[in-house]
Length: 363
Image (cartoon, rainbow, N blue to C red; front, top):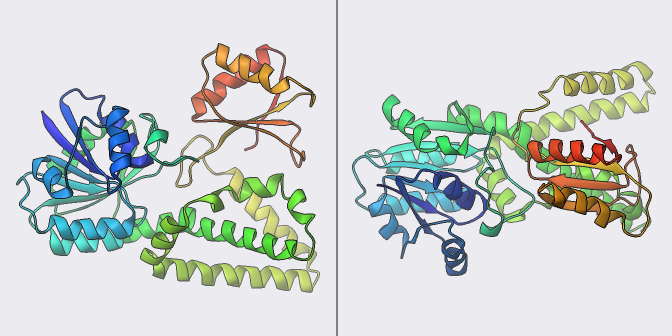
């Protein structure tokens, strides 16, 4: 029986635990700074056993997973460096930035196997109650090994294979550069757009009503945890500054195109973006959690929501959110249905079409 110790009983830690529990040869031990969250994880069967402390759980572990914010992870690495662990223990994390964590582990844990990790999956919801065993299916799981042999890397992949994720190995610097542009920086842009809307609301309150459509969709990620994103940006500081500088130059160029009424350059700006975006992978799960939405075009009348939800419940399709759209900007459907996976969305699409509902998707 192998002991897996997970520090952090949030969405990611809880989902990893549920996925790893598929292997009956492992014992899941959990710890969280919040005793309430740790007790809840135990009551829900997310973990098999509660640890009295990080030290107590770490001493028993064959695999230690640090499912905590980046700043907390570096602090825990310092604590682990003062503990006598099993000689063959593998230590990993789930942080969205890697250079700070890897440098800390290289300096403080030279005698232990440390393999940085970043499962690129998430959800609209947080906390252990939102944990799902299938959260990482087909998602990219990035690994940044140090102090690790090829055999140890294979061992970690085997222990994580029940996540059904796709493993990619790369160094910490490249990780932070790539994830910075596809995840970290877009969160800055989304938050910036929301701030711009807030400033305009001071002059004209009606603008928020108009933002109920596509604007809310493209800024969804601005609802993420401020604490988490503060830490991520500060731990990927150099890359963020570079991307912000590049973005400002791009916006200065666009400003010049508009000021000069340069029809050709304005057209090219949008045409090139459209062409590149349409060439992106359609099915792959990337750095930002995907939203598996369907739009249903139905009359806006009493009982329509219960009609649709009955069809889905009848076919045992899990619906995570349903919203009645006040404005039909760029889309025909009056109902937006959100699902937890591509599979659920496809099943919902089929059964609703069979019931003669008109369905739309956005790519």
